[in-house]
Image (cartoon, rainbow, N blue to C red; front, side, top):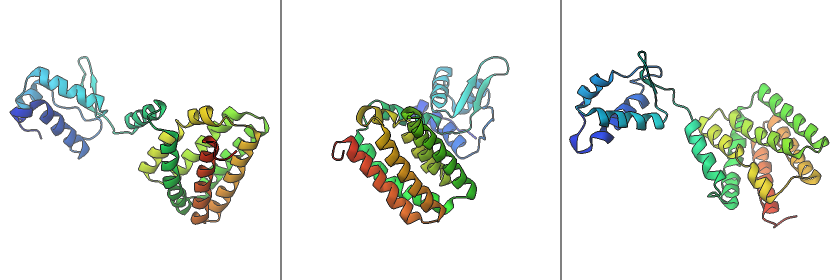
Length: 235
């Protein structure tokens, strides 16, 4: 499977070859890589270079290095957790300005909701209605903190409804970390939460009617309006 590493870039070549084998499923999740001594011979490299390459692959989330007699380098199932953590840190650091986030959401969430409407099952609609009912209970208790968390879950579930892992990843990453923007720019109150509830009543109704264009227009307007409130362009 592996060949001798190019001597002018041994370390990177080792990383690239193993990564390629994992990404192309030549090495399936759960597969144990050959023993260290065998990998050294395959790549014609030193123990130090090989171990450093394996550490890089572990940091990328591609393998897990286990110690002990039954240890070794095991291929992991590729997931989005490291990527989500990186995007979360970027948003939390303040490097993503409110304007950047709102611009992205206005452009993307309308298309996302339209696709979710096309693919929605009756179970999906029931889940949206369940979450909306939970949000309404938070509103009635004036529990703004849990109202926001439920609202974020609603947005994230719409991403799930697209059945597209890229949309799911982006939507979850954004809405898991959007809380601080409301805390900093638009603390919730009765009037704002009521407006939010009314918007989602309309969105869910449009999705139930399989009217993706209407649902898209409503959520785009919703994001734009709340952005304007945050920036003081609208009370």
